[in-house]
Image (cartoon, rainbow, N blue to C red; front, side, top):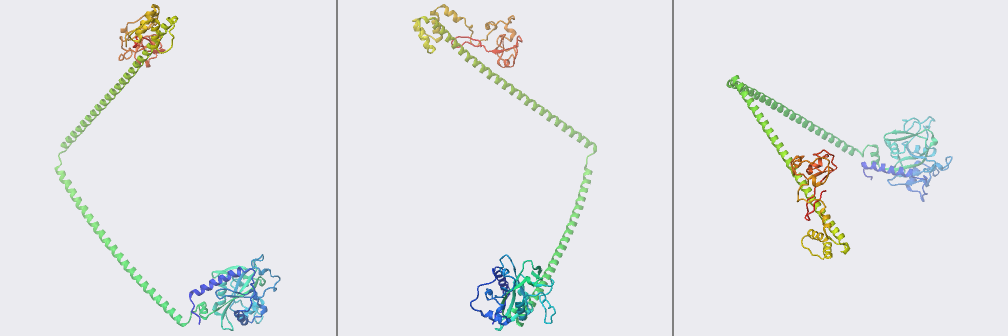
Length: 528
């Protein structure tokens, strides 16, 4: 007893059909090795269709999973050549399927004579196309085995009852010449129409046995009355359930609409109450404000008093502004005075620092010059006693010691006093040569024009006409420290001399400014 069909049966058929189509398309050539013995299914199908052994080709028989089997037809040598049998060769003939529900006689006729374009009936008239003439006259095939099964099984007429009592469904496997067909879309698949019989050649029959339940499932009639009644009851129950769910949904929607309507009405009522309360509050406030204004008007002072108060207020504001302006002016003046004082203090400090630096530089230079003068005196003394040969060389104290040793005299005191004693010992000529150097003045004393020894061609002027003995004649604030060259006027301080291109006394162009040198620790005076 066969099991009842399930929805997966058709899926299994589709998957099996897909594997069969792939196996058929990849078969190159279409023949398979010969079978050693004739299987029972082949013998039963051949006997049922009343086919001769010459009509079949056992080497092309194929059995695959899913219950499908291919009965090979004898086609070798029936046409002008056999190159078209090689599906993967240069010919490239396409594989297609043709399903028929005409019964064993039609199947046997196709095997023996091939597919015909509108074949002839028993009375010699053109037969009615069994697969329809939707796309015109021709042979109808499809590249989908599943669609071929659909055409063969429609209405249950395509099932062949074999001698063993099996219901078998047959679908022809065909080879179609490339370019010899037209493609059409039909029921979600492709349908090929072939106008020339030589372009379509049947090469085999795909067959599969189906149980009664499977046949009923493929016809869409179910298993039987019980199943039909159960399905009807289930459908009615599902319909009633849907109706109940729809009624419940309608009631819920009506209740929700009523609730929303009530909420909207309540909201509108609340808004109306709020507007009324706001309007009443505004009216009350307006009344209170009017009453307060009226009371204030009764208590208001006369116009003359208001004018006097306004003038007094304006005068007070004016006085306040004037005081503020005076205060700001005083603050600005104080800030300016402080800034000027700071600038003057800074300038004085910088001038003092510059004068101190210049004085220190003058002292350093005078000491260096004094030392150089002492070296020259020692050298002259050495030249004076060279006939007695002191040897020369060495530092200044050693040279003085050698002179003293050469003269046979030992003196005490400073190095300058010892050189003076040596000069006195050597003779009056060496002493006179030493005294003819620049005149000696007291330390930190100013140099006069006569001491400079320069002839300017102008009469000498008293010191009082040049700013006094020590005061700069330009700023009259700092001490004279610089003399102009070539005129020789000692008349300006250091900062003023940096700004003067002419002598402030005689207006002669100034080539340079000199700083007088003072007596050093050795008692020598020089002028730079």
